[in-house]
Length: 551
Image (tube, rainbow, N blue to C red; front, side, top):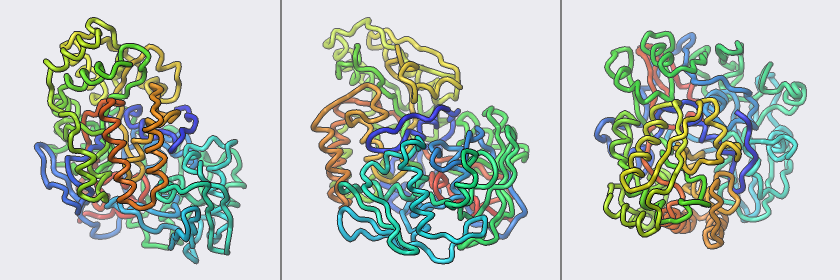
């Protein structure tokens, strides 16, 4: 997948590869107030959220894991997709860390302080060793984050550093970041691949081959072992790890690009488990007796991305009509295998878990109903003079979540008088919709599953700022832009969430994307292993280190 240029207000859209990579897999949270432990309801119609899998009872020699694609590189500055992050989270560590409960805690920095709105000071853990045996210093942090900031590197996370004025070593184990303006998002992104620290000497020695051959020279509980191109990547337990050692001596990631092949491998025991389970496989995995299919908290919504407002979709009444006509419940039942919840919100409930109750109400109360209203939708289409107008929706055989949502959108549009045409795109070309404006020519809408990399609604809502990378339709509203800037500058969560509630309402009123459903994270474990987290924390938490013997 070609690496897209950076987008203002965030990093490159790695989460959109969820769809573009056969993500008939699961990432949706049920309608709940937050991560496990924050009023999550235990059960919905067809699935139950669990806070985790049972802890491992002992160590094992190795376990194998299904992965839907081979990473093109393991260089952390290019880690914008599931395959890279799912592996790197166990090898490379960041200044801060997500927990399995999606909380922000210290990582390689044992302390992060904010003495004034423009300053962040990171004090590093002493005695942390890289995989080559050298010791972590402030020089490594300055070098590693500096690679993200260097425009010559085209880093996937470059825009996280857009407000960084200086990045300096202020002690042997201390780094100070000076900002151009207050930025509430920057410290949160230090728990993602944006905050990864690698050995300066190791990266320099590898040169242009860093991330594609040899070691990664990071500090995680696993180090990169054998990479058999086109087949698998092995991780070996790092004996010199500063924290609790991994419970398995080896973790083997096998590349199984065909969704049915991945399912068969899990059913047969050829692999021990996997995330990103094809929704069409839920039933077989649940009933097989080979293991357990778990669902946990995610930060993902399934949406319809509006890519062109120059034509018929430039009239908000048409966008509202399509949203009103969409059968979300039918899509959740068929496209998501029943494991999901319809939503009228672009952001997940979990992203608002830390917001005061009244702010959550301000964000969600009064949003348009998620239930179909064909009569009102037809009235809006007629009022807009759009009857018979053509709308083109991209679809692909990537997974039934993509194809069935496109089909549901066509059915909705047809019922209210639009001429909705489907344009089928090959799976390997679908990704280009996110990176290449030419690929989007003639496309008005396409399905997208979006996940947040931080537990903050602004991660998604900033996409509609003027010039934002995923603002494909070119929406521009100075008032919206000003609210984004206000939210970014607000360190106080209550203040920030209050501004973000206004953004949520504006995005909903203008139907900038069409919200459809929330997905939980899905993970399958066979009977040999346990311990993997059920949440989307696996992107930035060393989850494989928790996997061990089930018996």
